[in-house]
Amino acid sequence: MTRRLNRFEAGSVGIAALLSVLAGVLDLVSAPNTAVFVASGAALVTLAWSVGLATEQLGESSGPKIGGVLNATFGNAAELIITIFAIRAGQLEVATASITGSILGNTLLVLGASFVIGGVRHGVQTFDRRVAGMNASMLALAVIGLGLPTAFAAARGAGTDAQHISDVTAAVLLVLYGLSLLYYFRSGSGAHSATGLPHLPARLAMVLLLASTAAVAVMSDVFVGTLGGVIADVGISAAFLGLVIVPIVGNIAENVVGIKIAYQNQMDFSMLVSLGSSLQVALGVAPVLVFVSLLTPHHFDLVFPGIQVLALAAAVTITALIAIDGESNWLEGAQLMAVYLIIATAFWYL
Figure 1: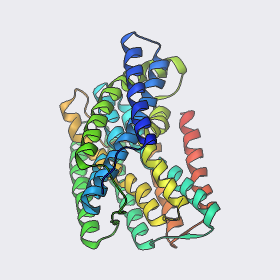
Figure 2: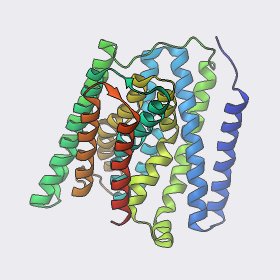
Figure 3: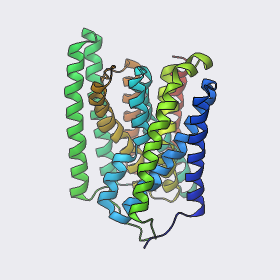
């Protein structure tokens, strides 16, 4: 069954287009950095929602397996493009912090909010602890992959050897991510059947996806171009900007979906969205950035500040402890969100 865009969806796409035009005009007339930053950030938020809508509709029309691949590919498209432009502009601290912030945001803030919202409405909720445990172990392995190049650089200094270690580690993480997708598809874990509800024609959904992704690329260039000025004008640190602001802008549509389905008591799917997105960033986006950066003047490696690796280790540890029993409640969600607030506060003053 096919349908047209409803009034809300069409209005959201229209708002995304208007905000993109506004941000472009402000950039062309050399408006204050903060104004361009806010306008382009708002445009990216709405465009990320449009990308999410298109991938969801393509998944409905093509089946759960292809839909899963599309969500894995485009779920973090906005943040990936933003980070690529940040690397090209030499904002390596922002790029590094955005990787850390995306993982922390999904495992602590989004998952925590999902537990709170779902727990307040439904009380104790259950999920498949085997899948949750495997996701937690994969995240722990990702922390190891980021931590060892960092430890080497701390002991021997950053340089050619550290870059080589990052390159090999990135290749290993990408292979592991591919194997995890293969495992999910063959075992059936994480797949969900199509809803059977009317969906957009595949051609229309593809046009929306390509147009939204192209607009994301343009807005990302504008957004990143303001970062240096915003850091200087507002006094915000590059680490906080990358850790908190960029992940929220790039992932907000996906985050809202995760919280919404927790409210609907679909905790397995909610955790797949939050922890799955973290895995995409740690095992997919970060390694891809290492190799994409070879095409730019500024090479990106997997040497992260020690405090970021420590924050990632803490996030993975508490997430694994909470998920080990296969149950969640609002208090556990509050605990996850409290850890995120502490980390964000530390980076505000960093």
